[in-house]
Image 1: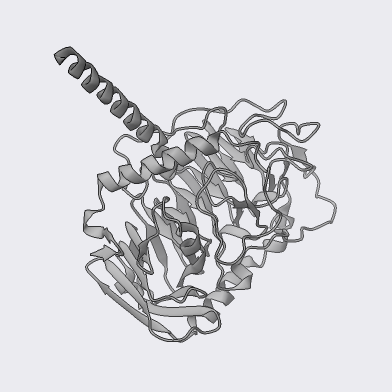
Image 2: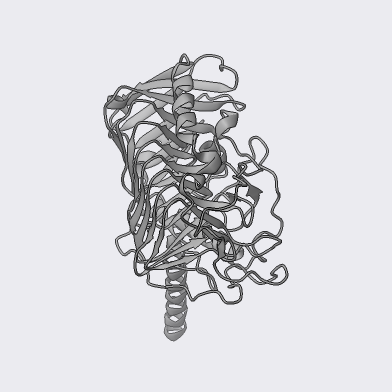
Length: 460
C-alpha cells in the first residue's frame, strides 16, 4: 500500500532512522536558538499555516489544549503535555524525572502566554517523590514569567513543582476551574452537534486500514465521515483522500464499542503526514477531529503519532501514543508509555475548539483562606536574554533522572532513554528522543569512514 510515493508495507527501521536523522539536524539548529519567546507572536497561526514540530514558542493560545473531566494521571515514561491542561478531578504526576506542562521540548509552539495558567486542577494535585513537574519552562521574556498553576484542593508536593516564576495557588475550591467549570458541558454539546452532521464522504475499513474519501461538497467548512467504533477498533493506518484544501475534517465514530488503536501511519491527500519531517504535519493535525460521542473507553497504544483532535465526552482514555491535536476526554485520562507527548494543535473546524489568543477570564474574587498566590522560583528582574532552559535566579535544582524515550513513528524504542537539550530541563522526547540515537549514528558513520580511509592508505 502506498501513500503518494511512500510504501506503507516498508515502513520500518530504515525509514524511522531517516526521519530521525532529519530531525536531528533541525533539533541541533533549534537548540542554539535565542531565548524562548523571541519572535513569538501574540496571535494564532493563520489558516493553513499550522507550524511543524519545533522547540520554540511561536503562537499564543489561551484555549484548552487537553481536558480530562475526571482525573489525570501520568506515570511510566510519559514526557510532556503542551498548552493549557485542565483537569476536572485530581491530577497525579508520578514519573521518574521531569514532566513538562505548557511549554515542551518539541511541539507545535502554540501555547498560553507567559505567566498565564497552564495547569488547572479542580481537585488535588499530587507530585510523587522523584518527579519534577515543570510548568512553562524557560518562558522568561517578561513581563510575566513561567506558567501558572491553579488547584482546587491541596498540593501534595513530595516531588518538585516548578513554575518558573508563575503563580501557584491551592485550596481554591470551585474557584480553581473558574471559566473552565462548564467546559465538560461544552465538550458534550459540541460532540452532539457534530455527530448530527450528514456524511460528505465514505469510510471503509479493512486489514487495519481505514480510508476516508471525500465524495461531496463540504458542509460549511467541514468534510464529514462516519464510522462505527467496531470498524475503527484495532486500526493502525488512516488515509484521508480527496479532502478539499479549504476544508477541516470531522470523523463521527458511532456506537458504544470500546475503541483501541495503535497509530502507525497517516496519509492526507497522498502524503504521509505523521512523520515529523512532513511539511504538512501541522496542517493535517489541525484539520482532523475524531468525535467519539458514545465511546466508553479509548486506548491509543503503541508509540506512534496520532494525528488529529479527540473529542470523547463519555470516555476514559489510556494514552501511550503521542497525540497531535486537542484532547478532550469526559472521564479519566492516564498518560504513560515511553516518551509520549501531547502536542497542541487547535482544531480549525469550529471556533469553540480553535486557537484563542486571549486566555479565558478568571475569577477576580479574593482568594479563600490559604489560597495566597505563591510564586515558584524568582522571576528575573528584567527580560531574560539567556538561552532556552537557563534557570531564573533562586530556581530549585531539577531532577535529572533519565526517563524512557521512543523513536518517531517506529513504535517504542528498544533502549529507551530521555535526552535533554544542552543547558535545559526540557527533554527531547517522543520523536526527539531519537536525537541522541541519530547523533550516535552520525558518529558511527564518521568513524567508519575514517577507518575505510585509513585502510586504503595502508594498502597504498
